Image: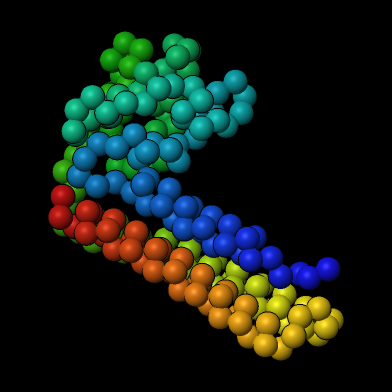
Amino acid sequence: MPQYDKADIERRMKGAVDSLKSDLAGLRTGRANTSLLDPVQVEVYGSMMPLNQVATVSAPEPRMLSVQVWDKSNLTAVEKGIAHANLGLNPMIDGQTIRLPLPDLTEERRKELAKLAGQYAEKAKVAIRNVRRDGMEALKADEKKKEISEDDRKRMEDEVQKLTDKHVAEADEAAAKKEKEILTQ
């Protein structure tokens, strides 16, 4: 049975691009975005949980996030989790709601965030290239086992390379768009 599976390779490359897009969504730009708090973990009920499992996050204003905690006993744990996430946010408790005003980004911080977006993109491109390498090795193994001909292997290697180029371009485009958004807000 052939080891090469084009659908699997495409799925894994798409997964790397999707992961990059979710990482980029968590980067802060000038506007309030609820995905900014996605990486926040909160210690409640004796274990670490994502913030979105203990509270509702909303953006009522362009420069404000609001966290509505479901269980009032978790209020201080949620506040602590947000403070320890190193997002540069200062939580303010207002009843059962935590308000997070977003301060203006300094030019230096914008450059750091843009650089971080580039690092995320590079990680995604490395993951895509690793998938390409796996695909190429599978094709060579299939040819060695006489399951495909040399011509088929070369044709399929071209397909793998085209998939790689397409997904690397998507990753570059997503990162460039985010960098522009960060630097121009």
